Image (cartoon, rainbow, N blue to C red; front, side, top):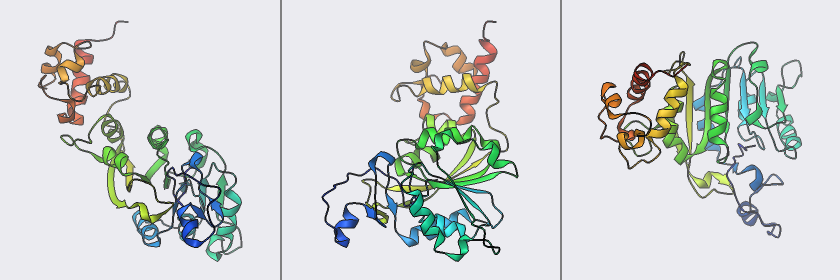
Length: 302
């Protein structure tokens, strides 16, 4: 899973020299070598860590989950402010080091001496939030590896009823797509499908040099806040998803060309849209109206 000590893929060299400069170069942090398998990059910039904590604004009673704690760069800051913290970590070799790191600080324990930290050793893609949310909605934070960021976000949004908000470190490119508005080149299927369920805010960019080893691209912090009610009704969502997917199948083509095997141009016009425009120019409301019009004019055959 991801590391905050943060996860981005890197190459490792078992013959790397042991000097401080070379250790940083080859991605060894606190005696742990970053693993490409888990997409590990370790966040070491204390100013960036402080900005993330400030963005989260944790309150003592928050029911907080951190995904991919790694060596505890963010964990140790959060646990000092919380009554309890649950973390989800896939790399079992790093868990003892995380426990040892947290054990060093008095703020990781309650006044009675009980440890505040609970570790779930599992893949976040299989995480069921229901048993964790029995006492109320959850706040989620962490760094998401590039290769699972999008499916993990959708996995969590499928459980949005249990979530207050989510603050994530992502690849900058993914963050821009999540937050993009109509007319922007980054606006697409991902923007629409996520924004129908949650409000998205891109908070700030994190440069590669904030990590050990540095990834090859910029990262970004985004915050997702589930809507009280999704913009698309559950019964309309399958059709809505289909039409959005088809509309963006070929970005250079017009809406009419992308949908010609699914809808006549007359249906697009009936939805108040111009058949000759491209999908990236259509708002979420426009796609909702298109799905509603399609459902009305072309109801499924029983």
